[in-house]
Length: 371
Ligand SMILES: [Fe+2]
Image 1 (cartoon, rainbow, N blue to C red):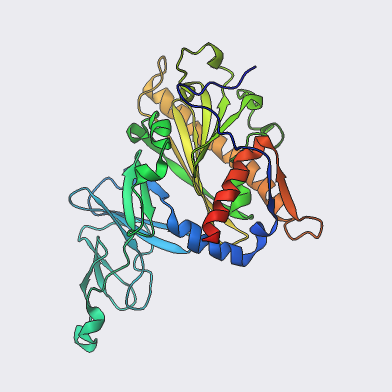
Image 2: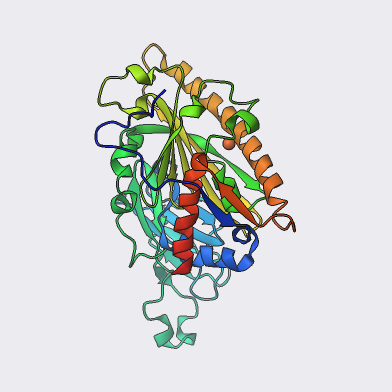
């Protein structure tokens, strides 16, 4: 058995070896604050599917990391994003996603009115303010863009690179799937009793599959032949599907067509892709002890050869059950791991080569936190 062929020009990264991490990264509240302010504030985030905002006036309220962001579809079909926070006294402007015919959102505290770009449209009792206080007043802007049928946001519009340059080599790697033409089938969410990194680490190796997922995943994956690559800051794991003969694939091999390809879109989005369907799970800390996970299920609009559209839709719908079971198993072991993080008998994690993506993940977080 050899290493999976990556296709032309692609090879495994050289520096993916064993590593270790100090236990305090999971339990230290100061570490959590640094991750929130230095890591999550400076990366792109996948905030939803474009299908969630089909019409002008539709808006999505995205809430993670103690942030609340309104993402709105404009009359010209473009998207805008802004902090869902009134610049008057800091109230949340709108409570949940919805549609707004008037194109106006009114703060429930003192009725400041905003348009769907987050600009201030009217101020009650305007003459009672010092005019200087109102100059340029608006909600704080958030950068927004679309790639692969996904809505992306960044908290620093002045410094945000383009989404394509952020994705780098993944533009071609993930672009293979053409997700912008896939159908979004809906979402799920979970709250985990574990640090966000404990949760995400379960998505960065497949070694635990025969133990943790013994009930839900029965065969089908050649886990022993999983291979890894890093794209700085993202990473990938390719797990061959036993039903598809990757060894007989014509050169150059399109590994996406023969494997379960799992991607970390740094820092916290896990994209699990099969040739014709897949799901995304975002993993955000609520605090250092709890984690919010959102799942999004999608599939090609056109059914694979030999399957009619209705059967294909039903088959994709059934993948919600699979995703739920796998998440239940991963989150339950994550809670068991997290419960021991204050143990006097625990000081660090050690990672082997099968867990090399986790070492790479921690090295990158360290770089952000140290800035
Ligand atoms: Fe797992």
